[in-house]
Amino acid sequence: MGNLADLKITLVGAGGKMGTRISNNLVNAPFQLNCVESSERNLKNLQERNLEVVSLEHAVPESDYVILAVPDIYIKDVSAQVSPLLKSGAVIITLDPAAAYANQLVINDYNTSIVAHPCHPSVFLERSTKEEYEDSFGGVAAPQDVVVAVHSGDDKKLIEALEIIKLMYAPVIQCHVITVEQMAILEPTLVETITCMIGTVFKESLDETIKLGVPEEAAKAMLYGHINIALAVALKGTNPFSDACLIAIELGKEAIIKPEWKKVFEKEHLDLTIQKMLKLT
Ligand SMILES: NC(=O)c1ccc[n+]([C@@H]2O[C@H](COP(=O)([O-])OP(=O)(O)OC[C@H]3O[C@@H](n4cnc5c(N)ncnc54)[C@H](O)[C@@H]3O)[C@@H](O)[C@H]2O)c1
Image (cartoon, rainbow, N blue to C red):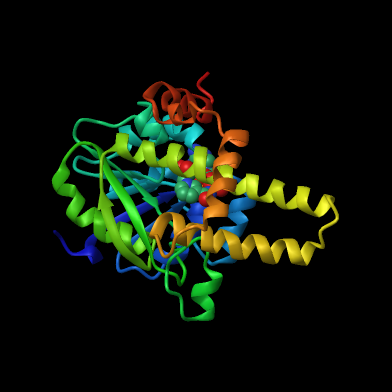
């Protein structure tokens, strides 16, 4: 591994949501950071943070790493612009597996592409400071894990890339190196199709409860506390659900969950979900 201080890194989409988080973390890193941004509004955001913006054509040819913090639907077009400009041995880092999984990422044989996605701080994280409690997304104060996969190219590039990825998403506890296919099972299937969907069901259930006349504060107190205990019991086995609760769980599953729901883990469902997310169908 070379010296990080000798590296040049380009962040494309530096003024977007992830670009802002990553540029906040990399601005004080030892290497040179080039910010690229195309929208007027987000250019302003970078200027307000005193970050100089350069063109893709100027930044990419000298870069050792190019981070694509652009929406997944644009990864194909942006990587097609970036790849012809890349020097041999340079690495593209994307932030979500969808485009790589669906073969939408344009990459040369002589370059490496790596996907690095933040896990976000765990619901079971032991937080101690106010900053840690306020950092639900991660990348500011609350430590998180990251999942990383080499999509194409040289696996040996991973050693240095992991150091950069840890700075991008800092503070990081651990990077889990997996495959792009495994990462696609995690996201979208595990965390978006299922977990985020259930999060929205919690919210709709809260609204229904309040509509029935239960005072909002009482409903929120019961829901938030029970989300906590349900996760502790179901995922950590801290203590068993009561016998009566187990009956309610089974009746709830029968009423709400389709018997064949686990087909969301089948490849056909995953492929269709990603095609729809990337607006390919
Ligand atoms: N937002 C999240 O919570 C989140 C979490 C994890 C991973 N990701 C991933 O991060 C990536 C970026 O998502 P986001 O939510 O930050 O998107 P975003 O829309 O907030 O930001 C994208 C930025 O890219 C810029 N951009 C688009 N095309 C460009 C081009 N050709 N040249 C330069 N800049 C260009 C846009 O102007 C915008 O500022 C995606 O791969 C997404 O899946 C997002």
